[in-house]
Length: 171
Image 1 (cartoon, helix red, strand yellow):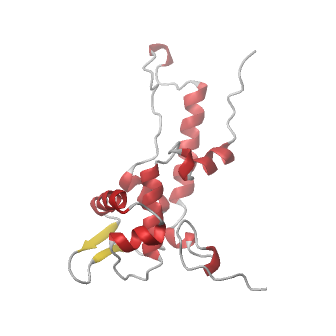
Image 2: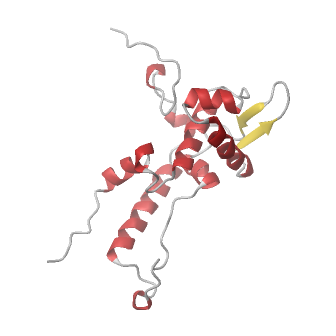
Image 3: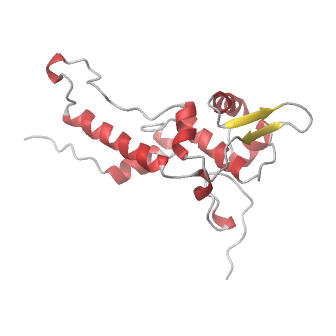
């Protein structure tokens, strides 16, 4: 009996963006970077320190500092030193995609050849790695079509990823 290699892509996508998934398709570092980018997008261009971002996103400040360095090197955020310093997004949140943030810190893994180096596979992927690569492609396309601003286009009481001030539901 041949095993069914069909993957529930919806479940795969959902599991890839939750912290407890431990980075199946995106890493914890990428998820932290997204939290920081969404938080900064909601700050209307005002610089925010690592400590403020860490508090607002419920992230460990030490690890976030390293993530912010990666985002700075990846030209996603600008780092400003001094009394009124902190981080700001380089691009307008309406132009910055989720994929750009992820690619700056830890790109989605894709399979272009057999990772096991099996000679008989040649340039073809086995069914498992083909499905995983297809899922990676779907993630890249979806994340490339999603802007950071679109993640904030929700009522204030439903802000994503971060511990923003919560406005009680109106009755």
